[in-house]
Figure 1 (cartoon, rainbow, N blue to C red):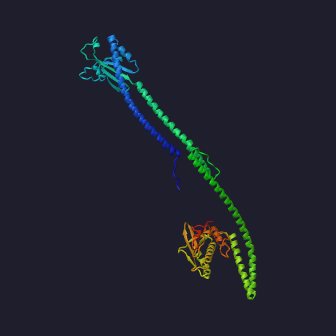
Figure 2 (figure 1 turned 90 degrees about the horizontal axis):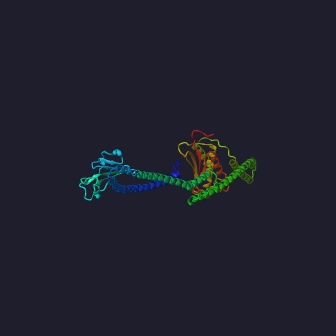
Figure 3 (figure 1 turned 30 degrees about the vertical axis):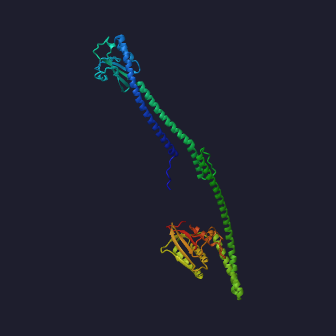
Length: 498
């Protein structure tokens, strides 16, 4: 039978748990990223506000410097303001984009029209309503707004210019970007660490709580499989596994008791076999010693019966001779049972063998006014057997059947044969009352008989002869009318086993 494919408990339990952890962590990570995007949006808005505020403050600071020093030291002021780690560059542009002043001296005189914001046309009366325009660039927050000509600027500038210039500020986002990158790396590392800790924790917990007790139980089962019924599994520490361990220990205890009973029965069987062997040897020796005197006594009685002319003594002597003949038959059956000859297996054609036995038993059936039929197949059936032993077994079964149907109307005994599963099955069936089911356990035991003058050795001897030839003898229908005895013989396959 093909062994079913099995999976490790780690794969069956740990893998789903790890997948569950991954799904939950993914959900948490998705929620965190969503929150982070919202945070980035809020930070961007805050940065825009910060850029506006920073630009306004810087504009006021530059106005103070210009008013205090009449614009003489404006370059120095710009360079000083740019020393802040949050400032990348500060420029003052003309309305057409020419760099008038810059914290980067090399940029003075260059054209940066893209840095000039689009101003409303016409300018609104409330010029403070024109806010600097803020845009976030890679690594920078760019803010640019107009510097309007005010009354306090008339000391240095004429009144015909509404916009004196454009204040252009690049605010560095390096620190904020580095902080967010560091936070993202720490969050990723924390997630990986969290996953590793959870996975290792689940594996260790399952290993100690589930896997290790199960493996101990598996080792104990291996011991039992190899015949060690003294092993006992220790407690696992959990209610469910302890229940399993308790059931296993109870099963092992029952197996141990059953093994002890089996060994005891085997020892009793061996002792019985030894006793039977000894009894058989004794019976064989006794039968051998009795046959010669019995034969001599019978011969002497037969001589006396022939010489005595008186009818009454002759009748008594003949009756004694018949009883001695019966005793000799019993002794011969006992000798055959105790010391059966070794079979001489050969290639035997079963149909002809059974036909010869039926012919031999026909006179006995006619004397009892019983029918004896042989229902044999048309094709020959060849078996490996001892022909004489087969004839003896079939003759014993026919004689037993004739005894069983004596006195019933229409007595009939049938001999048949069929082939199945590589064996030939010979069957002797009668139409008598059958054999009760409670007699089956003792049916083939020696000296077990219900006949008034039977020895109880016929079926026991027949079974032994069949088993010596590699077959088996059995009653096919216990408890049913019409007993049917069948015995099997191996079919001839071209060779005869040594």
